[in-house]
Structures are given as structure tokens and as C-alpha cells.
Amino acid sequence: MAAADLIPVNIVTGFLGSGKTTLLQRLLASPELAGTAVLVNELGEVALDHLLLRRVDETTVVLPSGCVCCAIRDDLGAAIRDLYGKREQGTVPSFDRLAIETTGLADPAPIIFTLMAEPVLRHHFRLGNIVTTVDAVNGGLHLAQHPESVKQVAVADLLVLTKTDLAGRARAEALRTACRRLNPAAPILESAVDTIGPDQLFTGDLADPSDRWEDARRWLGVEVETTAPREASPARDVNRHGRDIYAFSATFDRPLDWTAFGIWLTMLLHAHGENVLRVKGILQVIGMPTPVVNLVHPPVHLDGWATADHRTRLVFIVRKLPRQVIERSLSAFNRLATGGERPA
Amino acid sequence: MFGAEAHWTDAAGQDTGSGDPASGRTRRQARLYRVALANKVLKHYGLTLADWDGTYFVLANRTGRSEIVDHLAAVWPVAERMAGRACDPLDPALIAAVERE
Image (cartoon, rainbow over the protein chains, first blue to last red):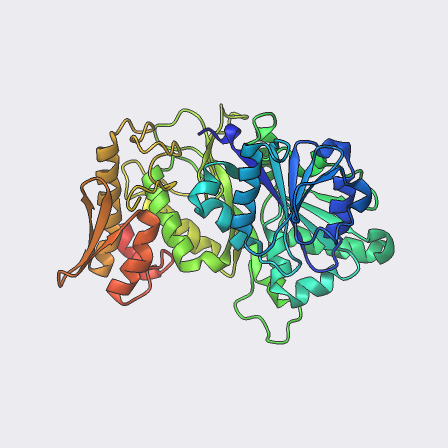
């Protein structure tokens, strides 16, 4: 099935108290959310009573916009399958997008893995933008003390700074800088300033047929290079979780061999999955006339190159792993195939 | 079905299980190419991979012990167990060995 036929899944994550629920409440009240199903932790938390159109069962309600809102009881995979079943049976309005709210302490990686690993899910759904809320008042503290918070920022396609009106400009700017260092390519919106609707948050990912290049440009057009970690972080370094993580982009002049790349990436994820937060890029694959996009799950084929530069560009967000070794290793694996190459 | 699970490494993103349109290889040729490349890495650990009937892969060590694996991503944890050491693409010794291939 082509990526365009799959239902995009947006993940809304953010640390405890970072304004995730407030953002969702605002979105759920929007008529633009018609055609979207939303999985939340607690129906009670998002206070939908005044919006309710009808209750399907104890976990599922339909809002006046036609948006389906459903509580995740225990298992996310089961909740998605159940919702998809109701869509097929017609007991809830058909939806063409799914948004999932994570718990505040959630490491988003297992949620992404659930989507990509379960055969039933990956045949009907694909990962869309990941939106992370960061509280401008306490976000710096969360990043310093909670590795989950760092991961949430690092995996985001879009960051929403909340409570900037309470934090003051200096603190908000400091947090913006910290977020940029962890994730240099994700645009940052401010909930107190920007108009944030479903369009701003959820559309425009790599596989979105209407807008697929926007995300690629954002990722690959910026100068993605943050500071690599020092060899030994002091034990009392309050910001140690953030300092370990950095991003870099590697460019390769000649095409990649898909098989060699697959061997290398599966091996890297096996050995260092915990420390590879994101791999994303445009690949020029041997024998393929059009670019391929990979995000550590089934790749997406684009219609053509947006620029004259057809080189493979990969963005890595990693914890502690040395850039030079990653580049040298991938180049060595690629040279196992005929016509290998070296980083530019 | 065991062995039938497609993986994103199976073809150049087409996920069709019918071969590799990128290279023009048939499904069987694509599998054999995958096995050949993987073996260039696995020999560093004293292991070999073989295609079994186009359905599974069989990973074996020098003592003749073998295990069935479904797809490429599943090779590494099994290889690590059979080799008794970490299979890490960032290991300088492995990179040097692969560069000598």
C-alpha cells in the first residue's frame, strides 16, 4: 500500500504539566478537527462534556465536529485496533487521521515502535508529525532532570512552547536555545503567541502527498550541527541528559546500496537503539530514479527531487555516539556493495 | 505466518515481497544478494547466513549450531548470542574488517 493510503498518526507528547491537555482541549473544540480521531489518556481530563455530541461506549465519544475521541485503557495497540474496527463497522464516523496523546512520563520511542512493529497497525497506519509541548516555566528543569523529557524534545517534528507568558522572555529564550540544540530542525511555536490549529500541528510531514517536501526541506535545509558531547560529563552536571544528545547531518556523494544500508541500520539499532533517537533523511538509492525517505521504518518514495542536489543526506539525533565513527561505519558498509562511496 | 513477515529492509522500500525494483533483481536474487552482503559482516563473528527456501534465513556458527531467523533485523540478537559478543557496527575492529573486504 502506498504511504498516501495509510492513515497518518500524530503523536502529541510532552512532560507532565507541559500543557499537552490544554493544547488538546483547544484542538478538540476546533471544527477543523473533523475527520480526526484522538486517543487520550483520560476522557475526564480533557473535559469534553460541553462538547459532547454522542457517546459510543464507555471509552469513546463523538464531538460535534465529527471528531472521534477515545480513551486509551491499557494497551495502545489494542486501543488503535479497537478504534479502527469501529471505523470499519461504521459505529464511529470515518476518520483519516489519528492523534495520540502520550502520558507525561512517556518515552515516545515505544509508541513509535508499536505503530511500526504490529503488522495490523502498520498496514493501516503510518507515523505522521510528532508534536511535543515544552513548558517554558519548568521545561529547563525537566530537561535537566528527566531523560524522558529530553527524548520527547529530540524526537519532535514540531515543538510547542507553552506558558511563555508566565515564564518571561529571558527564560523562554533560554529554553528555545536548549530545544534547538537537542533538535535543530523542528520549528518552534509558542502557544501564547501563535495561532495553533490542527493544520499547523499535524500536516506537512514527509509522506503527506500535498506537502511532502516541506518537512524534508525543513530537516535538510537547515544547518544541522550541534555540539557533540564532551568525553566525560561531570557526575553533577545538572544538564547531563541534554548534553549527551546532539544532532548532525551527513552528506554522501554517490548513491547508497539499499541492502547495505539496511544491514547497517538494523545492526546500529540493535546495538545502540537506545542512543539513536532519530534517523531521517533523503536517500539516493542505487537504481532508483527518485529519492527515498527513511525514518527508521518503511521508507517513503517521493515523486522527484526538489533541488538539483541529489546527494543522500541523513540527519542523526544521537546520544553520545561519535559522528565520525557513524559516518565511517556507514561508508564502510556501503562499500561492501558495488559502487560504494564516502561522505562528502 | 512464520517467515512471511515483510521487513523494510526486504526491498528498496516497495514492501511488495516481489523483488527489488530498484536493482531489477528478482525476489530470489535480492534475497541472495542480502545474504551475500550480510555474510561479509557476519564472518567477522565466525557466523554464516544462508537463505532457506526463500522463506527464512539460517544463521550458523563454525561448530554447526544453527538457528532460523525471519528477517535481517532479527539476525543481530541471534548472531550476538551465537558469537558470544556484541554485534556493533561502531566497533572499530568490525569497521576495519569491513573496510578490508
